[in-house]
Amino acid sequence: MIVLGSNSEVAQEFVEKALKEGEKFSKIYLFTSHAETSEKFVKHIQVKYVQQAEVVDLDLTKEIDWSRFEDINSDLVFCAIGHLGESTEESLYDSKNTEKIISINYAKLIPVLNYFAEKMERKRSGTLIVLSSVAGERGRQSNFIYGSAKAGLTAYLSGLRNYLFDNKVHVLTVKPGFMATKMTEGLPLNPHLTATAKEAAAHIYKAYKKRKNVAYVLPVWELIMLIIRNIPEFIFKKLKL
Image (tube, rainbow, N blue to C red; front, side, top):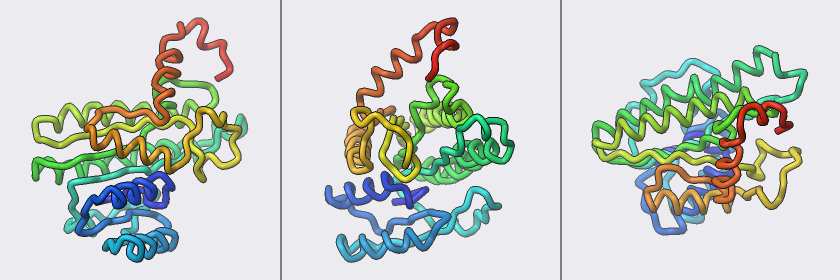
């Protein structure tokens, strides 16, 4: 199993969920830009599940040495890489903030997903699970830079799923709503619309086993986004969302 963004609470909960369900992996590769934190998780799953794991350095803000990944293969890739960035009025036009949001959520991420997708295509097997966001379904004033990057990611995953279908490779697009994680710490989230990392992982694992194409976390977000997508633009542009 390959985990991109392995310090994500959702990613770690998904790994644990899979192991608890009896999934067998020869090795779990934990890709991260913060190796020290992932090393703690390696020790945890080694002791609790007797699972072999290895931390692999991956920093999307730096040049990638692709040769380091040549011998890394898996039939399951779970990607939780994401960067919310700042969304205040002061940061809205900040070029560094904008560039980092777009780079990590889309521009620098797509080549990484392509790299492992191509390996799966050659083997004609595998599943790619990628966390996008409901924020990508319609641009809203509160986070439209982040949302635009996620919209691009969602469109990419749709096309990749279509492209890989004949090669027996499945692509699952996950669209979380609010999640109680480090990335959203301090934000005023509605508790009725917010999933814990453990709840999110359980929903994602279920969607993975059912080979769904798109999965919302929590399922109520599918209805919420259906409504938001269908608000006429002349009304939508006046709303504070």
